[in-house]
Image 1 (cartoon, rainbow, N blue to C red):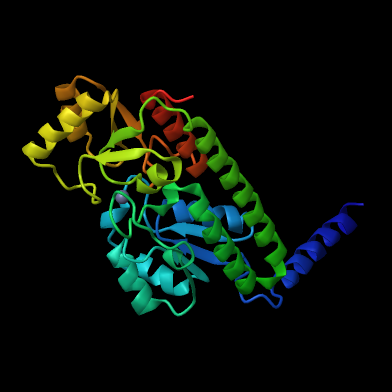
Image 2: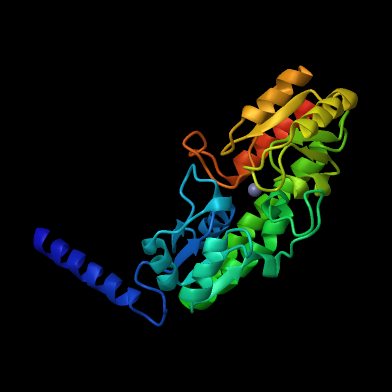
Length: 293
Ligand SMILES: [Zn+2]
């Protein structure tokens, strides 16, 4: 019996190899997607599933606002079947896409337009509203279906599952944040404008939209008065941002610190988490700080 079994094995491998070289324009390993930073890498991974490969230009622990690209990363963009990025958020990525990418792209603000939040007009942090990722998921599925038509149904069904998860998350936020003692919350940088807008909260940020901007002593004194006046219990620091200023403010106002994750990237501490679990951690922190539910 051993010999025929071995022959069958070899034949099966040959058949599989032949099957992979079909009409699809993608490589034998499925389409290659390059995503600019974590939230869109997460969307691409969910939609590509086991069929494609996703790489993230922003390594864990790196703050994506100031990303610089290596020559290898620039080359990876030109070889990708699909590039997913957000215009005007990472200038180095915009330049590389413009100069090196002829293939398919999903530029997320083209399908999920930026809006004006309390962080300003064209606030880039759109993934803090889960419903904004729905059209991104659908656009990624459309592009993957075109790059790899043999697996089109798989990409569309993966996208549908992600959309169901995003809708469930949105419902959880809406329900939990419907009845809070306070609407205001204080954060390090202005990453949560879309969250505040969708769920009727008020974001007060210590720095501006860029996480490395430092507030003036006058601004800090003003914030301290706001914290006391509004009865705020917690000043939120962020992963990927130095917590020193938030800690100073919390100490001066005699309130606690907590952590909200802007979900711009994973860190060593959050490597086992994903977009959905990090959003749920943020919800728990906000509900606790603001006396919700
Ligand atoms: Zn940011």
